Image (cartoon, rainbow, N blue to C red):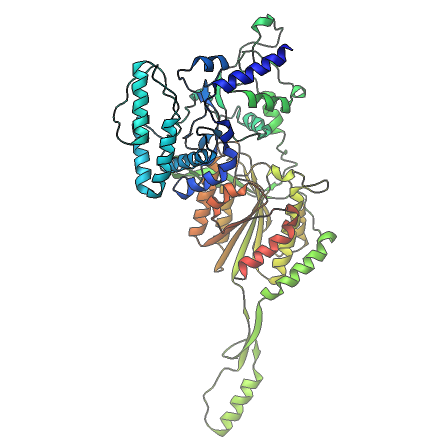
Length: 613
């Protein structure tokens, strides 16, 4: 009974204290696609993520009811940094859903024209609004609607201190007439949230930034790989020193027990059997701030990660000492020389094998489709030199010379071909994600193997020059580049055996692999050069290569390939590829295979389309 009454009271007081129009609320998830299109179309950085922002501390004067209900202690605001644009997870500022929707679009337009840095928050926002309205006059009516509705929705400040009243008047004037307010009074509380403006980025304590040294790099990556994506918002974080306490007895009084949101410097042990990922995920979603501490002893975790790497006796066969390659640093806007070490390798214990029976029928169908691409070969007659004597030409010359003096002509014929002058390199992602199961019987790596085999059968039948490589990585010093077939090798059972022996690897340092593939293609003498990239996810690794760093490096590697006359094309089974592949390959430089089991048939068909134009 007590809980029931308490629940009713909570609903009542929360509803009374709330200033939002919940019936007209618009969720970020409903408009995220439109926001992304507007943001990038009007000049926003294509590589930035567009996502929902979690609530942040906002010290504003609260009413008596708000204090009782616990409202407005934290507010979700619009801001951006180098990695992403973050907008409120829900907007219920106006009584009409159409206005709340327009507010999302307006914030995306502002963010597209702003670099995220402020000298004076209010003055800079006014100037930003003026610049946007001058550049896009069609937005003036929309802004005026939003401005009038926003000012009319503001709380009554007549009973507030004089300074706060003056601040509110200045903000209202700045909203209605951008650029007209040059000075703002000083107040003890932040003004009521101005949802029509952008806010400075939520500064992260330097201690929160990950420390990428060799001692904890692998551990952090392992923990990150366990995380499950639950929603679009991001949490505030802080890093603290881990406690010095060792395992032992914990004594406390019940009334001093910590809540989930409080941090206690206590060694809780690291027994994997006690982990409960679902509970941890649920708790993380409920927290406003996530506190993390560096473990003092990580040797066991490091050993666990290192054991995923095969020993030298069980690993693939290295070819040479490795190749040093540059990598793009987008923050410095430069290529850092010799940053990556790429190791060419051969699959270990591969033996010559025939094409699997399950693929033979499909291979025959694909080969028949490729017959139209076969080179047309013919005899060129009347040549001065050639493989055979042209008897008809010699007989004509002999008869004409008996009748009258005749100039000597060519008496040979040469076997010529209208050859397709093209070289193709197929680069397959062999990262650990390819070990995932598509159904009860097959994994992604199985589909990749079948695709490469049918690709080889198709190109071998038409006589095109091609090579096949696979890649994965473990940090920048171990980019594995697996040789399956080079351009000089004949496609036979030995190559089929190599393809069938590939195994899931580690991470996806795509930039280094593309640069090496580009080097191989540049050495070919053909006039057309095609680089096909087969992958199931975005670029990533465990040493700074996650997120924008990997995307920007891959983008730069593709630009380098284009400048050298190479045509890159990506085939992916990643259903979220639309968020990053247009930036990497352009709108016509990739395709998404919605059903991965169709990849073995679709890959040769895509090659047929790309090379028959």
